[in-house]
Image (cartoon, rainbow, N blue to C red):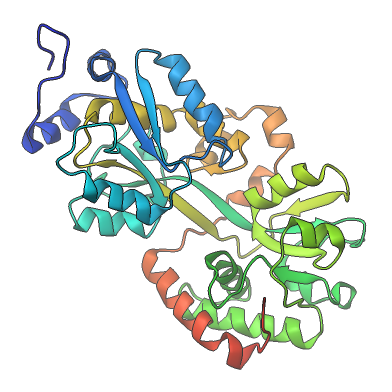
Length: 367
């Protein structure tokens, strides 16, 4: 793998595939090859998202010989894919080695030949529903829909979706987006539908619409796009939002007002992001070492510190590897054990049902 000058020799696509099979996780050979490449190019990793600042710092501290070249921290998933396409023949610093994108981008990138397979050493502890069987992409972290509650205004914190229908929650419940356009809001409607007994896919979407129709008819639903500010001001005392947003909002408000964050007892829906290595990565071994770090206990706990549940959360919790101080800042671990990871097909079917029928069924103009 290494020539006498310590530089990585150029590899054909076939030899890259062979290297994936031969070089094992964090082996001496992989570490040496990554150090010889000397650089890892990331893209779209803002330091305040999921604790990425500390995660990157941890990788640098462990492998100081590898420079982390960070491209466009504020880019979106589609920008990451375009960066791979635009730099297929570019081995310079503008070509990303790795990407962190929304779930739907994984299969599409694989189909277009833009990513290469690599299975990390902790592969078996990643849920099958959150990874490509051949190792082209794999879930990295997720959030679940939760209730963020202003305790100055809400005496009894709701424990489940059905509780939101109680008379005591009049003019209180909001979504963190417009369910005709926002993925977070769509998933909130879907989660309510699952809790109401809907089958995965369009059926849960339809039952979710029925739930919000009743919630709206009772006067409990507030047709406002909720956020930490509207929660604090009392406009949306109960907000349905991703848990990592709710927990970060709780920290931001710092007790003014006091906030509860609750994962409902049923209808726990997870939204997943994924990792992948570019098929044209200039530094393929550094990319593999980065993946090994991210999926190690250390890397996974780095994301958890930023309130994003690492994909290996259940495995870490089961083996007692999560520090108690981290656990104390989170809803109970048992809340996440029943999390559902909707497939791409289920998400698409539910989205169609919800976005097309929200106006006719629920009739609330969320804005």
